Image: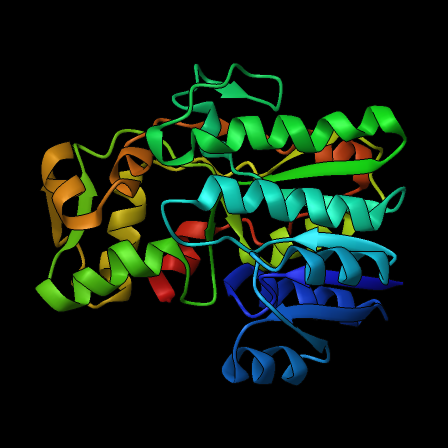
Length: 288
């Protein structure tokens, strides 16, 4: 199977290319720089030069593939517009072949206990734009196309990702790991390698499917901060921030870190046979 991937040189993309190559897939990955090209070719993929704004490149690369994984995200005030145009171009190219789009569980806002993909949407400002884009992606299932949306939880592992950027790195710099509020809110986590496996399986999912990419680990934010404090050699060194302080330090993502979310990935396990194996996030984060 030939798969076209956007975001292949990124955190999730690298793990996903590895998972595809292990299965014998031929992978073509969008790259916009020599450095990105070296990353994806080093993982066994071929490089397609372009950016998410190059809709003609995206359309032709999708047309040449048996399936598409859209993992990339454009940084900027026009993220929503670029993502929508990119998705439309790749869906035009893919036609009846699988197209897997990336969402995120933050669109569910605060959850009332443990919920699944059918929960009401209450997105923070940071991800509110995703809702309409995902509706447009999924609407094309009615035309005989095969759109699928994967909605990752908070991704961890390999000493990278948002936990590294906003918690571990500032902790090493200041001597104390941040925590938004009292940290009693829950986060729905997934290891990057388990998430990569879900993306691969999603290529065979029924048209119009939506899957929460979470491994049913829902620790509190304080537990995560405490684990990270052990990893940086400062056990128990936590700096609690008000939402205003966190926003000043972290930017708009602080609102998402303050969400109280517990989700289940049971649908992906049931329908796709997904089997997450990295199920001790706090131990892994404490040793990273």
